[in-house]
Image (cartoon, rainbow, N blue to C red; front, side, top):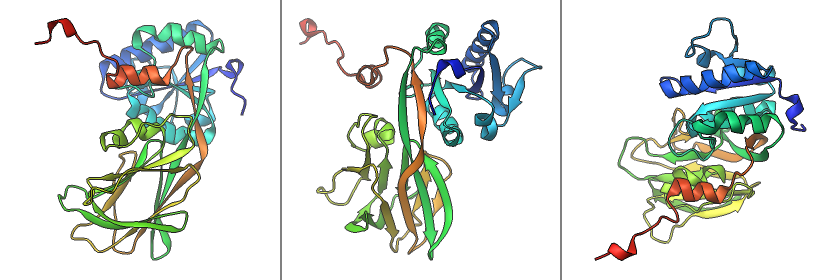
Length: 300
């Protein structure tokens, strides 16, 4: 699909619930789109937040069928949720930050109209971010599947016990591990949970998957970076507790002995738009506190 500003006519609006600042920004964008002759469309959950009666609404699952562009107002979690619903439609998404870090929702609320106008005029950078797809198999049958923009996480739930599992990559045995779990991350997710687990920061343009052990029982166990087309397979061994797996922090699924977790690249990519001037390294400096100024003259 060729992304062109000339195709931006029906604009989807998605917002994080229960936050007054989100509603304020959504209304600002809605009114501006009408003023410039475009057609805003709320997803059904977001429509319940705003003080409009005669607006077009559609369920989030079907939003991608009727719009040309989606604007997400909220934090990165809001964009993650929208991305999973929209990725199969190949619809471009742009994020306005009303959350905390904002690696994905990178437009400041104070600049939203100016930046949005730039995008609507065709001034934007396009990134294609790949997702992971997860399959859980029990006795050879698929019992659960999901997709994730950030990561798939094998963990021990609320238990403090380590879990026992085997890791295979592209059909090759890698290791058996006792740890709190394993984070399997995309480059997008490398600045999220995987980063807090000691994983590397991976530039979004990289075609790679990162595997980060969580508190492994051996000091020699380190993060591994593999090619983006790699097939990851986890085999669950006998444990004192039931291991669990989740995609992008969604509902966790319990696993039994012998169950296998299969993780690979999803066939569709998220079309993520940025206004002019977006810089991944600048985002890292801002969000992660790099390059802070220090007052050396007043040091003891």
